[in-house]
Image 1 (cartoon, rainbow, N blue to C red):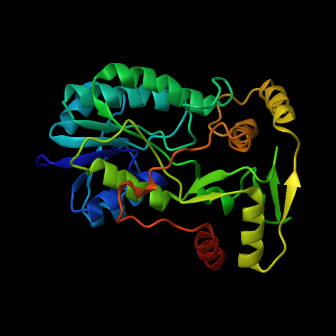
Image 2 (cartoon, rainbow, N blue to C red):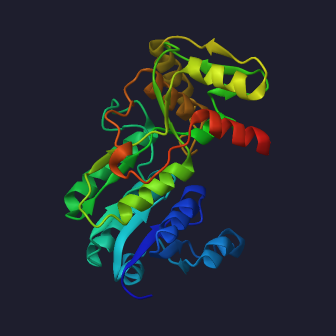
Length: 301
């Protein structure tokens, strides 16, 4: 592949695929980095869209460096625990530095971990730890923080039970919460990656800033069935419950039940709140309203 392409690591994942498509839509070539032996069915759509599918060992810095020669930006959409977020992503960063890639976008798509208390969220602690390496690398980098993926409101999650029509919360139901669907995150990421100007180290976005009561009212309006809020305790008691549950293990799981509760505590306490928002940085982008998102997924269901 000639110079002037953007490399996307984790391109076969849900967010990675959307990022690849969003970059291609901007007329920029994409090299989609996937693990060796990735099922062809997971990358067929990207290949047809025009991306170059590149299987590569994410633990091999030399191999990664060769593949990144000529890249203008590396986007990481890797997802996992330490072996992925620190080790594999660290190798990717080392390769980007060795290949003299001008810009690196780490896989930080989440709450504002710069404001959360260390130890309060295992997965966010991994982001924080990776940033120690990122800051020492010398490469220009930008982290995109998008709050919670809006998709959690339509699938199985600790927050919404669609069978009982309950929206669970801790603390106060009026706390402002940040939600962004993956397609909006991908579009913004592509805009940052193709921006000819330097970009800030942190950019914060949210398609919808809503409260638990807003979610209840919107679900009721969209489905025609009555949803209600269900209080699960204070933020303080939630912290104690998380500590008790974590004592039983599951540290090897990417998203055990207590991990979901850690995200809820960070959101409902307000510590992970994104402020200020950088939604207006790229005026051409459109932001998905919560009601439109829920209606679309309700009709699909």
